[in-house]
Amino acid sequence: MKTKISISDFHFKFSGYGHYIVTYTSPKTGKQWKATTTNMPLIDETKNAETPKIKDLIRLKFMCKKK
Image 1 (cartoon, rainbow, N blue to C red):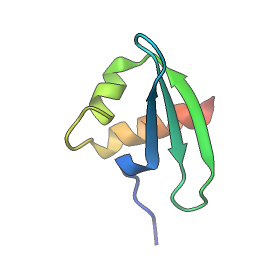
Image 2: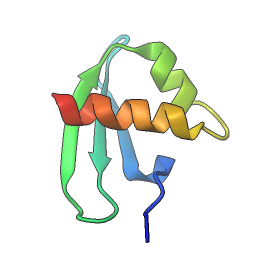
Image 3: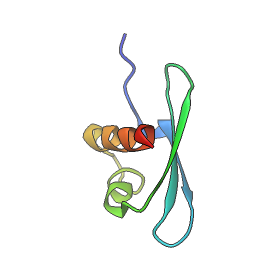
């Protein structure tokens, strides 16, 4: 069974003006990846949205995993 991504898989920590440290935790393995971002439109579309879109969560996940 495929595990769906959700906003609860992410932890956001404010890191200064226009910066966030985003931690993604895999729901399947528990492994974590971290990235610092200044991409505020992506933060607004995920963290600050009432119901974030799956495509935006996937973009955020790949941003965390590529660094």
